[in-house]
View 1 (spheres, rainbow, N blue to C red):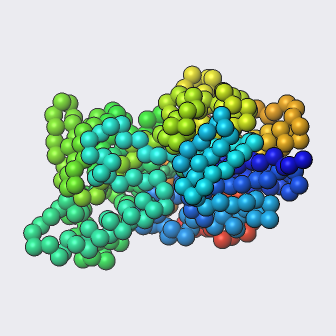
View 2 (view 1 turned 90 degrees about the vertical axis):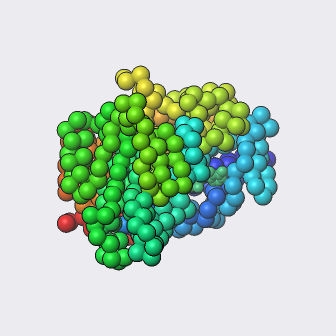
View 3 (view 1 turned 60 degrees about the vertical axis):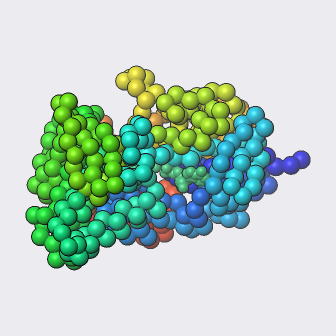
Length: 406
Ligand SMILES: Cc1cc2nc3c(=O)[nH]c(=O)nc-3n(C[C@H](O)[C@H](O)[C@H](O)COP(=O)(O)OP(=O)(O)OC[C@H]3O[C@@H](n4cnc5c(N)ncnc54)[C@H](O)[C@@H]3O)c2cc1C
């Protein structure tokens, strides 16, 4: 009898955790496991704001898939998924086609642009290593241009961040730390640089405790970040953005516009005909799609309702990495002939947002608020904890964060 074919799409938090757990749970003669990913590396998306600002080297964020996945047990295919045909149980890749008996979709997120004019063409997005490196290079290039221009062009030194949510705030903290370095490097007076965060909502960090929000804003303002709240981005152009506040429109000149105001599930899922809610698959408790018993969805492509709040859980790496082991366990059960599948119970350990490399704020252990060094310490420990789960102590030593005692 032929081994069942398990295909895992995407080497993000959900896909990687599913793969490394499954390779331990079953023997090579039980199933053929294939992992498909665009790149030959996994990246820590939760650190991309650092790569984008240039405060962390890209090598820290990237993890070679071969360093954590056992290629004697898992067939790795570096390719791009184009579409899925769940009825025919096939996945179309740019360079081929795969058949499966069981599928895991972990294709992550894309930035959501909400149809805002010019955003796709003129804004930078923090969503993968390639565009994070582009943001870092672009800002640095504009600083290097400044003293070479015949006229004063403040838009080269104006960095505008669209969205004061989690990602926008974390990027603001990093870029505020990076700017003094760029000023030194390119002989620019710091007072000429502006970092402006534009937020459509009445407050930054919606959903966070007001005391934590106040702490974050005070700290960032002290580093020179300006906040424009209740201000919506209406249009992005090559050298400016149009914003609206109280019905009044204004043009802000900038050649460094970073859009960090929302994400959506990878559109391949909806385009492949899966039933979606807000672009994501509202999965069953065992993480399978409502309509296919052989398809699991993890991470930002999956929607899970929080019964207490009546709202979906926010898409986080924390959720994705907790889902991987449940899917692996359920795949083992199905491969071995069936039985009761495990249900996924989110265990939210906390939410911490960094405000630069040595400052952070957030909530841990249910409701304990943390600020400053202790929050930053906990955040770095949680990054290291993920590396430990993924690749053991070797990976922690290679990619971990150890600048924790100052
Ligand atoms: C700057 C930033 C900071 C964040 N900070 C935190 C935080 O502190 N804590 C937290 O819990 N969450 C955080 N998040 C959210 C978190 O990163 C996401 O929820 C998480 O990455 C989702 O994981 P995933 O497994 O769904 O997929 P992802 O991590 O998005 O990975 C998807 C993978 O699929 C691959 N892929 C995509 N499309 C294709 C295709 N067509 N073909 C082949 N491969 C493909 C990608 O290359 C990637 O490897 C942050 C996000 C950002 C952007």
